[in-house]
Image 1: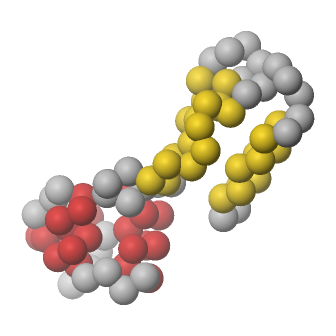
Image 2 (image 1 turned 120 degrees about the vertical axis):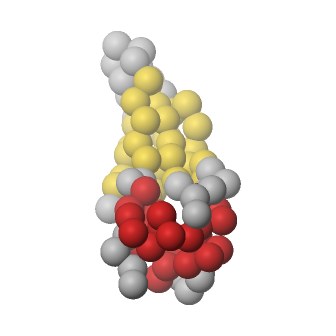
Length: 85
């Protein structure tokens, strides 16, 4: 049985027809993602929204300049996009 636990989401696969492609990965910019095959062998991706990534990083105490650096965006864009004054 495969299990992926993620805040607000739990995927449990005990049916051999459904397989997890990989466990949770974290991209360089902080977004969490995992993928699995549905019953028809289509790839399904579950990932955090970028707003969710921003909220998590900000709540962890990462500064706005550091978040902008991780996202690859200018600080002004990050402030505007996430309504930070």
